[in-house]
Image (cartoon, rainbow, N blue to C red; front, side, top):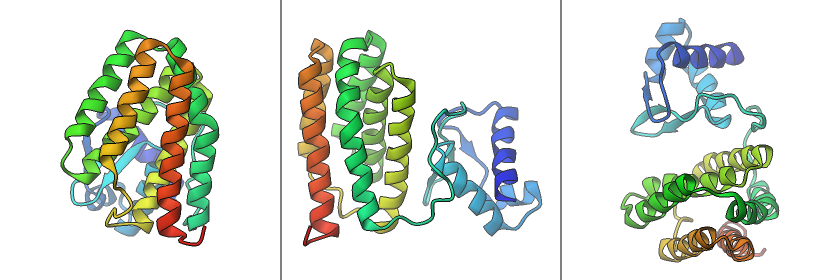
Length: 225
């Protein structure tokens, strides 16, 4: 049932010609549209969130994230992640994202650079923590896409989305998200490396950035690690 409903919502997005950032009806309204119970519809929506089709913003609404199908998607039936699994997601990102940053420095064009510059500037001025997190996600996904490797880029996008959803469950008050000034500084460093085409500098800065993030999460979630 959840799979059928998820497919139905995707078809509804297409029929209404909705795009990224457009708002969907509420879970209750969608449940009425598809004539199912609201909890059943919420389960389908969680699947769509896990696969990156929609973004559920608590207190705000349900928004379209993307409309295209992916080659690589997270498993929507994975269940709840444990703390050590969240850290392993960061380990996986550490293996791949520095390489993608290096590729991006070689392959990025002026359009992608302009988008990344806007995101860096926007993140530095964000006041609400969730808005800042969304800017952070866009920063990493834009770099992954600029690498030119579609499979690895979608793999990283899936990991980032999976990590964001689960971290929100583990840390609903977002106490783990601190050090924004340091993050913004290294984001600027990575952007500068991309602008100059310095793949080694982009790779090193991204690796250092993710390692710092892992240490921060580990020290708070697993004090003895």
